Image 1 (spheres, rainbow, N blue to C red):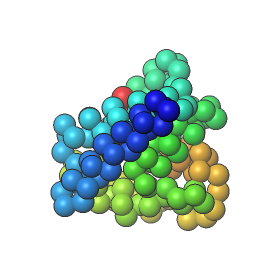
Image 2: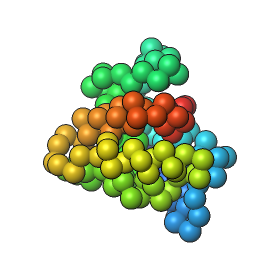
Image 3: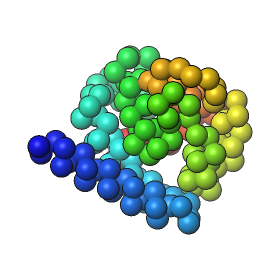
Image 4: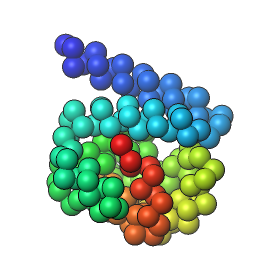
Length: 143
């Protein structure tokens, strides 16, 4: 019961952040808070090892199956991926801060595959492609 309540609280916080962002872009301090909330929610379901966290600092995206699903959870919590593994690139572009928006605008058309596939694999491929496109995209995953 406590787990269900915690999930509802996390969902409410994320949704509140998204509602606030619907009229404005995410500000850096809001981005940090949102990443913390998302990390806590998703790592509870899909634990991220210290090795994976260290690799992320070096722009290395682990192909560990649990981490792939962590990435899918991250996108799913923000309603940026659907049940068919299709990522909503327009929403991603629309919510990001100005400092990273030009990079994402270029990466999204290259990195999104609009085909049905496993959501964990889709999230992994999208993030991996983005980081290869421009390592600054790692700013979105730093936690």
